[in-house]
Image (cartoon, rainbow, N blue to C red; front, side, top):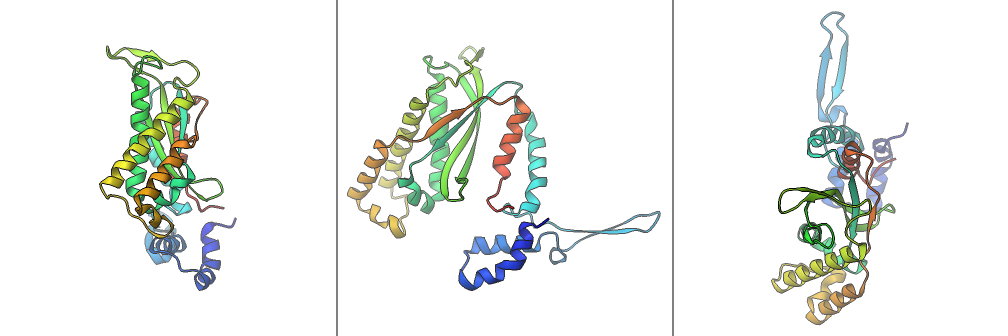
Length: 262
């Protein structure tokens, strides 16, 4: 069976002749090629009875390495099992319009953090509204920065508990359908994200490079925000999970899934 490591060993040197990898790309490529080889050292195990020896080479532990992520995922799933209740969950996805992709890519730590912040505030505020649930909910959020076609596509997957605690600390179940309308979710999320984005701009926290340099002009930045306000931000929900273990398995796939695989 051909592995990603085999492909890198065969073609990476040729790739370098035509393209210049970034520092992160070069490190990931080097780690993948050396993973579980003598280059990283290892351990020798010897049977005390028959003297049989077995060599086990060390893993690179790079989060982009397919050889490493399977074990890491299994350990993570086992540790997280205690965090999940025996109850149904909803799957909600939040996306941002492509007009913001360039700006987000150049301010990844700041604007990925803003995605998490906007999602959390959106869900917390709307779920407390008696019109929808009237309770405090629990949820997990996972950031994904690429789509199925491997193009840049930042979005957040959120797993939401189907119910919550009222002000009197009493449990309140949600209906079988997700308790907040998708259009309401989308409008609230986009409003929060753009509101905070304006604050960051005024506080000079944003960096602008390449094609995004034009947005340093306040008028053009306002035009960008106007375009985003007019867009319907793609937000959707999926059916509930079949049980708590399915939730953990799902989260494990997204927290340890990598773009490079065969």
